[in-house]
Image (cartoon, rainbow, N blue to C red; front, side, top):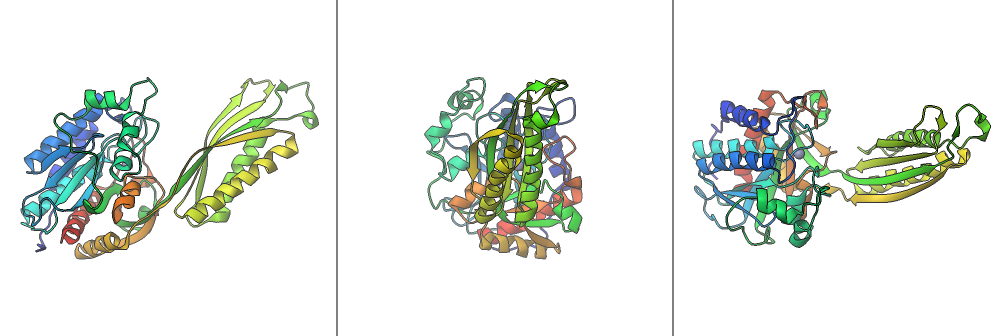
Length: 417
Ligand SMILES: [Zn+2]
């Protein structure tokens, strides 16, 4: 590696790429909706693939639709194991313009900076556009990275069905990329390391005034569906001591989810984001409440601890009110520890740019969670204004976007040797 001090990002091009992508699938509220393998997703992908080809990258795709664009020039072993970067272009309904796209066009900006500076590397650098990260169409998220890491078999991915009954394989045939796909998704050992640039989607960096986050672990999650079964009855004629109010039991339990996160600490968080009250009449005591809770923590022990507290709280909240409950585990995803080697590379890159960096876990799940199963991985976070994400007001100071890309460029140069 011959690292030039003048690794400068083309700010105008970076912002223009982000703006261009933000117009694809744009909703009236200013957010954008690009479901995996939709027309909008395909349009976003083909815009970026054009840019990649113009930048001289060798652009291919794999059997589940991940795009893989390799920098073969200025590289000693263009067919050897690659240093991979990248993110996703699909979005949640009415999502923000940075969640995903920053890690894709930011990677392109980083590679263009390396090219302008004439940086040669031993290993090739590759940009991946992972398909279906958000899980807003098919029944699971991080589809492309799960396939690439071997976490889920290609056949199982191709058989997924969306709520309209459209099978993944057919959606891929309609809106996937043309040409012969690379066989499989990735061979073991074909990826040397992985680093993903992403907006933080929380308020930690903004609060500490540090521009760069180095991700140490990606929080795992447990989601449970819970039903509280009480007795629907007349809101006027039933004395308070004769009620079996399902909503009061659920409300008490919601508060215990908050307390469990506080007791466990260490970055554990708990949310009840969905509550359905039945029969839902203004003069009827709630007879049934269906809830979903979402628990996250960066270490398996912490995740189990908060889950156990929340389960124990079910009985404590329901029994005193004569309410029954049922619960079922929807999913458990284990936390993903990141690797020291790429983490140190990001820290060295930040230092080379004269920027402060802080280590932190990611509360949100990302493609890096699965890549970490296949190779040493980490993520670079840049601050989110107001900690907002998954909404149209998601934003990051352009200076921080630039700095994130600059740190990524240096990190790639360090990792690719
Ligand atoms: Zn994302």
